[in-house]
Image 1: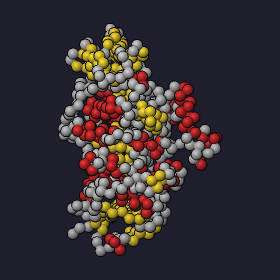
Image 2: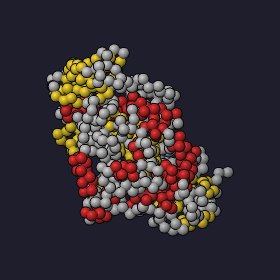
Image 3: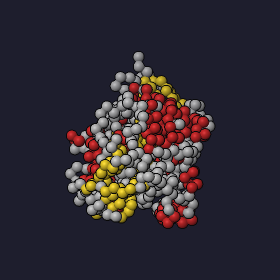
Image 4: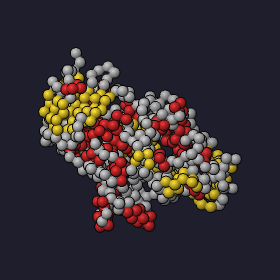
Length: 618
């Protein structure tokens, strides 16, 4: 590993190094707090606007703040821990003292990646890093290979969805100590699981953001985002700003042994410089490690092929990108969503097949939602670089009632869609509880101070006034208050139901499908030409997966209604065996198995479902 901290506070045998960027300040002092430690020490200014000093006698556990030209005092922008909250003093943390046991861990590559997204605060009743550890073996047994933690950067209050982080280097104190997060990562590696972290670089939360106190250059004078002023990634003094966020990424990878980062809403990172910030960040992360795979994954609705192309092809060399088009086609098809960005999607089998075949649907066509062309040609991009989902925190939590897809559609259709997701060549992502069709919603929740909280509640309800279901103000009043504790409590998973019917039946389907994905040669193969996808009719789709050495697998998915499927013209003359149907009694308590003629092959569905056929090789 070739990285060491350059911002924040880090202890050594001689004391603690303090370093902070404050280019317009004339004097910066570190103020120590606590019994026997109260003292003020001046920092020396460098030509690049950073102030630094080695302060003897200061070590892990000591608390401090900064005075800027006598004003303040302020917590460290690169604080490793905020034990008293984001407005309190920062704490010196020694990242080198943790007893790691993962020296033989080399990471998880894209070919093996199955992501399980979770929110630490609602994943368990306790809502802590330590409590997540208790479920790692179960997640490994489920068949996922990586957990993705929603943002853990500390925020105002005691609970938060995660996207209001302001102490970007500090794990949220309500989830535990920094070493608790390290223990979670170390335990995950022992269980064979990678750990990815969702990081937010496109904006900071509305309370506790002290960056502007240290420098007026952190925020752009030209760019704005949905959340307000954009970051200064390409203007005057932007180099130290870029470095701050790159150092943040490297700190998570090195100080916590994380296996990758999911970069939130990268379309909001406006950058007109010759080398895009994301390309620089990706290169910095990848080059800082040897002997361990680390992934950089973006969430971006622009469908830009350059993001995942190598630098040699003028790309940004990210490893993968969340692609919403698959999710949106499925929701339009199964749940009927047609407002907002769903206006751009038909949910037809033809368009769904095109989406899977290409990786995303929009490759430059006009978008109604954006009133502009959207997307680029993804030809040649390996399927694993596209991350697909049926649910994620955005697509559930950004719904007014936090309802999940399986809350709105027939269980048979949900099982069929699950087969399509887990048998597709793209990288699948599950959202916590999806694997047992959890009854609990995932709502938007915050814990801001009274006046800010009131505005957040009003804004949340106003956000939905353009939707027909919430056009009546009285209906909007029923949208759960993000500030209310019950809103947060309602979002916590109920683990007891996983072992009860009908949830246990869904859970078994996920286990079987993930095992099949992991062991079947045709599904393990991930090259661009490893699959065919065809719209059979207006309600059914065929996904054919081919192995480099092994049998072909046919996945027939009837996503709505009843219907007959005859595959004899393309796939007749071969011998097929039935691997499974979603109507097996082990997966549903009211099985209605399709009638299957393997000699053709052909089948007749009485309701939505999926059939997997495996070629018999002699």
